[in-house]
Image (tube, rainbow, N blue to C red; front, side, top):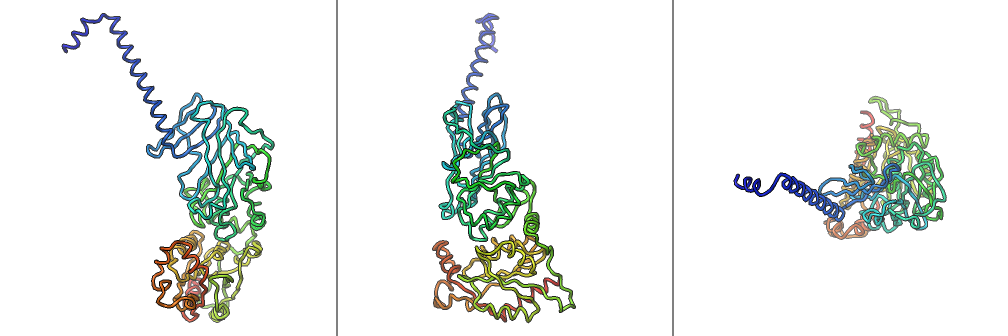
Length: 467
């Protein structure tokens, strides 16, 4: 109260106004300094960079700061929250979806997005990425080419277009573990389906780490997903220009699709229907056996292997199955297998069985309500068996049975003494790393089933077909 009285005596009316305006100005200046400082801190802590172009507004730089869960948009005449475009936070892959004036140069492995701004926050940004879905696996990623995504400024830095495209592009790699049937589907075919299906064929595939045999093997699937000839981008000297590009394929889980993450709500049911349409697969549902009808014989496909995890008594297994009432087919799937013919063979069967391995991936062609029997070899690989085939089978509407072999059914008996850690303490082998597990339990092990014990599993499959 005393302070107000002194103030009113010391200053006239005009002086008080000027003092008030000065105080307000000081507050505004302090606020501006705080905003600029905050922007600088956000710049330093950014974990993900997103870029997009808008012809009416100019370029936008979007920074995702996970510590405060906000997006900062810097644009000409505009400030708003933007959807993240590039993601580096996914555990399995890095990906970018960019809209704007995009230039792709395969020879230099660069994707350039021109910028008209000169601000240092915009003109010096780039991201290196490998467009394959196993960034957590160093072995796979050594086989994938590195690409640079750059936001550039200045006419001299912007590459000129040689070819203009009026459809979006998807850039992905055929490096990594391609050539293994499980990885072909889990890492490439299913992610490519998830990523490209939204375009209804109006999309251009740009393939890095090109493998002609892979393209030939999956030709019918690729032609179904894109109406345009695939570009081997690594050897292409042209500057390809697009208004939209997706770099890296979307991945949800092993051999599966999460509808909640799919742009159009796709599921494995949709994918399997896509395969049936692509390969003209006729059988939609597995046989249902009447309780009192012993004349109808379901078809059993035994996936054979040659190099490892092979059945050493496949003839006895087949004979036992025939006695129980199966029609038995034995077949091996390898890189030279005609995918069209093999898919039709699998689709004609009601039960598919095999030792844990890539061959079981062919269950994608089975009719609904069919049965998968996974033979799990020694080595405490239950987690692999579960994640690779048991979980995915449920999403495919395939019923699952499992048979775990015993020591006497493993060829490892011929290589190690029974008191060896390979039998006594498999987890000690796991502690040595994946290479030890792979070398011993997957590459050196064959299987000789106890047909009397396995008979119960075959009988259970018959009972399941009667349900």
